[in-house]
Image (cartoon, rainbow, N blue to C red; front, side, top):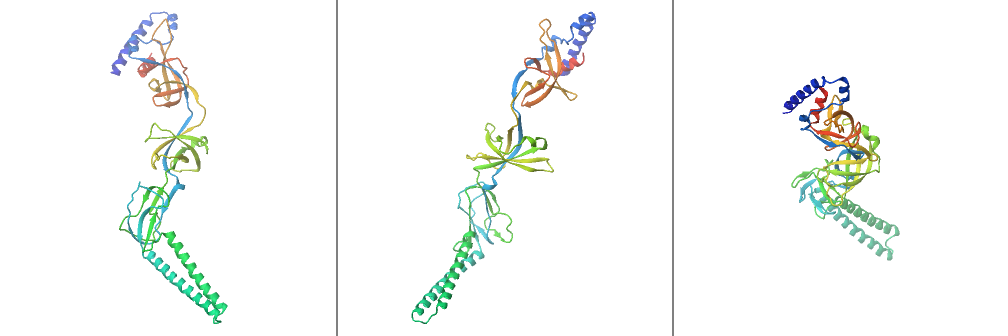
Length: 369
């Protein structure tokens, strides 16, 4: 269809050119701007170039991640068999809630030592009391009493040590250790399973990781050419695919000083409050950074732009009251593009009519004249 229209346009233009040869050079000079036949203009439509404010905004790609200062990691303190896991990744847990039980010989040994220490304390107390009674009858010396007191003191200190170790490892009164949540939040990692055996000597990874999502991080990636535009402490806003109509306000908390050798980007970190829990780790996000004041630009529809040999053009309809259908091509410089609107910094002023439908057709016709 476009080829047929183009051939018709070329035929009309050729006829127009032959007829124009019959006029004097003076008459041709009066028609300096190209006149397009009515048959072509019927398939064109124009739009008025508008004056618009363009925001100097830098947009970074990024991802939602957990605030590392609000992650609780749970390690298994001993070797043993795992049981009583009733929670999965994504579940919310309160601080202190039981996560799992580890049945362990080590836990049993600690409980045994605690009982033995209790017995030692009772013996030391009886011995001290006996020494005190004998001292009243002159059958015990001060040295023997001090030795008895020291023995009782050592036994009590050992019980405190064993109890502290048991509390740190959550050893129960039986032969098991209880894993509990250190903070309130969502389970983001789970590396153990019911009825499996855990070897304490291979304890590199946490059994559970729990994240409090009241605050989250947005990690963005900055290209080298934009590094100078990023400043720590600057207020920004975040948009996500999950909530396209929502804007989340945050602060650039940290600008990392190391470039990634593969992607040639540098990381920035934005702290974002998340009281409703809408933002989840792993979500894609855009960081919008205002890098300057809004500027005035001429805006036209994207369809009005014609690209040729690395240059951008628009076809402008001239305001000639005596002769209609006067058009000329005009080179422009594009400053910014948003959706289907193009913002022009040079070559076109507001108020001009530009062709926004079949612009390429008339552009080629003008080239062939």
